[in-house]
Image 1 (tube, rainbow, N blue to C red):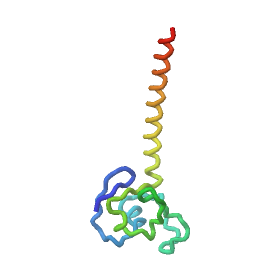
Image 2: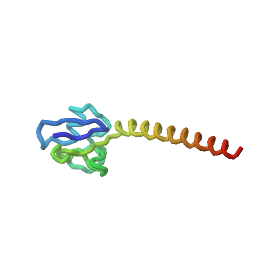
Image 3: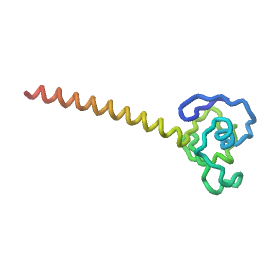
Image 4: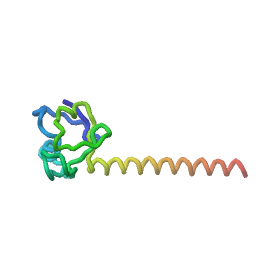
Length: 106
């Protein structure tokens, strides 16, 4: 199955019953989701975003991840960098427009 993990396409051909938490920690080597209580799904230490919603990865089978988008805190860093870049570009464009407007008024 294919899915997106922190903005990068991944392919998983393993056991579809494997928990997303086990995949993230053991195969993808992502350590932000923690195994605090699995499989009770009570503490929230394993929470990640799946298709825009918070899920407890210790009880989410990989079969639910197919064609989805998974975001962990490691992926947030890349997202923040992208947003900062976009904001800087927009700021430069606004400054250029202001300068052109000022020149028209002279």
